[in-house]
Image (cartoon, rainbow, N blue to C red):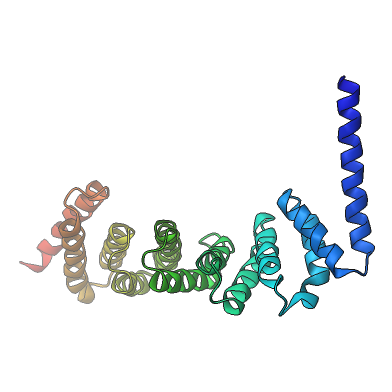
Length: 264
């Protein structure tokens, strides 16, 4: 019995392969459409794509085109070819504005760009593009079933953009350019007032102001020590229980001690 079942499976397998190979070589676009649909429905997306690529130009404007281009877009998406999927979904949404798949296509097009977003340390051009497209989707479909997912993705992408901006500003502290670090960190806080990296930025601003002050020439030290003290107050005002409080308190002791020489 097992041998019979195995034989049936082999026959079906080779029959399917033969059908696909014949469709690839056929000049009949209707045959290619039928087989590509079968491949898509079976989850054989790579095979479906090869056939879709062959017949797509011939079906533009035809009644079957909407279904074909939707399957074509989904096949790229299912195989994680996000650049091509994003393009195809965008084209589908533009070509079929009244389609029942319109909302889904708009969302998946935007989501594809989010999949192209690199790690935060790299250029974030694709991340910016993804945020714009997802925000456009959210504005266009405020009651969408995809809204929660879209908002979650936007939050993650914006966090990545903010981390990149924070690390760029912090880099000045790392290379000991403390004056530039304070400016860069101030700009970061101004550009991203609600950022989750605000506490970190305030600490590194304090650290930069402190190191600049204690290494200053005497005629500039008092002013810079007071600036460092202001930076300390800014950090504690933001979060009195800051994870950086112990380091900040050590700095404050040194700042106050150095300031004593100017009060005599």
